[in-house]
Length: 333
Ligand code: CP
Image 1 (cartoon, rainbow, N blue to C red):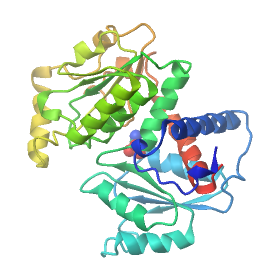
Image 2 (cartoon, rainbow, N blue to C red):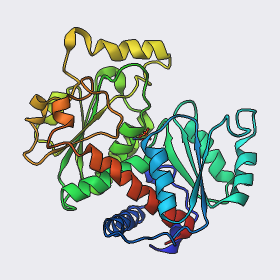
Image 3 (spheres, rainbow, N blue to C red):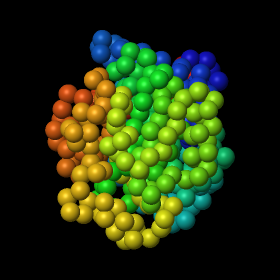
Image 4 (cartoon, protein in one colour):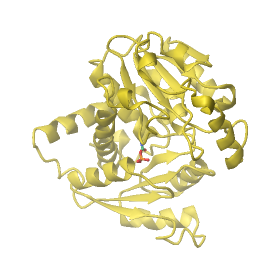
């Protein structure tokens, strides 16, 4: 790892070169191997502190960062707006200028409102690396764990493989676009052809689509948009399907939920990953999801618990990627 990653913010993968991302993935694989071998690496972040500021809940992100920094010899502080003076209006500038004096890294999750703008403002005033733990537009630590998982499952041979990035009719609340955005932006850079599938109301943001097409053109990969999960699944190597909101259609939560629910009417399975759709994919295809998923609504038990599903390996890789990110940006290893 070259020292230029020390102090570097990770707010979106698009801000990092492919070489930097490859180096990060190599460190993550090394740390994973060392852990498997029972080797400790708790000298890497000894006595260093990583702050985790969560505006929303988390299982994987929080625990992967917290366990990860412990394994590297450091310590994590779990912060929320209520547990700090942020809820009383303390500004991003004042908050981060103080935290910069206490520790060596800061992660933020803020998926609703202007989370990404908030993170950029924090980063502008920060003396320590700022890591996006998910905002409304990007989820870099998840998509890096995803690419790590694909490299493992396909022995690094990703060029020419086809990934389906599909919408699902996930219920109860409006989910951010961050995973769909992150996948369509990053997958072409690693040589994958993208088939983006969604109903008409679920378009991604135009600036993200423009950049994703540019990434695909630069990489010489395909980028197709279709309105059928079933069609998209034909000859796919990876099926990655999760819900997101009709953000380009409405910002009203109840209207958004009504549009989402429409696609489950009369027991429709059109936007559910089931065995019938997986049977259309290639013989060695894999099913992925960042978790949490809605069983029976986004994916059937048969698929998510079946032999093609790599969701638990994918979740495990969050740990190794988080450790690599912290070691690289906080210590420059
Ligand atoms: N995939 C993911 O970010 O999970 P959490 O919301 O549990 O952190």
